[in-house]
Image (cartoon, rainbow, N blue to C red; front, side, top):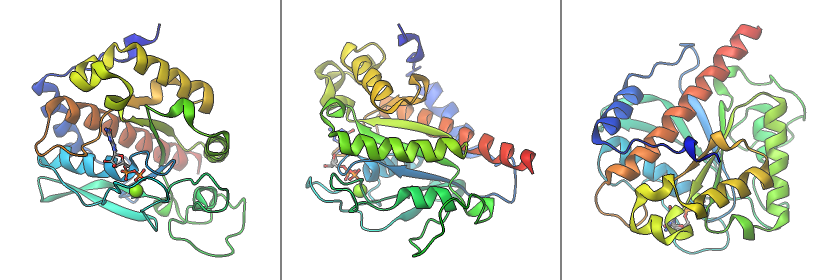
Length: 266
Ligand SMILES: Nc1nc2c(ncn2[C@@H]2O[C@H](COP(=O)(O)OP(=O)(O)O)[C@@H](O)[C@H]2O)c(=O)[nH]1
Ligand SMILES: [Mg+2]
């Protein structure tokens, strides 16, 4: 039904175009640079791996900055950490990715993402007053919210994690902050995709997982990006790069649109 959404062009030309577009990207409002993209989601979903994947796709070699935890359970990423991104080691790009602690199954253990979104403060600050939308200047706020979910376990995710994610989502929605889902581990969710990443476009299993994301979190399907992160590969793979770069380009454009809309409102 919605499969026409996934008509990824896996050609090397497309990869070069995506790299060029990201390299040439300029924020619409020059004061708001970098655009800040916040990643959140359950422990082990692949948030840190996604940052490494974006870094690897941009640089054309495997990078491992946002140390991925290979042990499941409690979150390995202790604090929020903002990562600058470069193209081929030199050009600093005008957007950053912010890694967060995982949303834990027990409430109270995870980082207070809702406070970050409400106030715009990335760093943990005690006693932040609630409901103060424009407390920090626009350039210090979050400009796009990215939920990271593993395709292989979406239907198994406990209700409490889903509830916390929905709460975060509703706060961001009220503030008009754009939201997307990065659906990781497509290789674990579908043997056909593990064998050939291109079949992500027409895998019934992936389609089902996207529908699960839609029904459990309410994110429109056109904002859900299935992909496989770099996690044990030693060299880049064009198809993986394309899925990663395409998602990143969309995210950056959504963040940019948001900032422009906010400035128009002033
Ligand atoms: N098969 C597969 N494993 C992945 C993928 N993304 C992440 N992983 C693995 O999942 C585990 C958790 O990833 P991590 O990035 O630490 O998750 P985080 O807690 O959300 O930061 C690590 O062992 C990764 O190697 C993926 O797309 N496919
Ligand atoms: Mg992590």
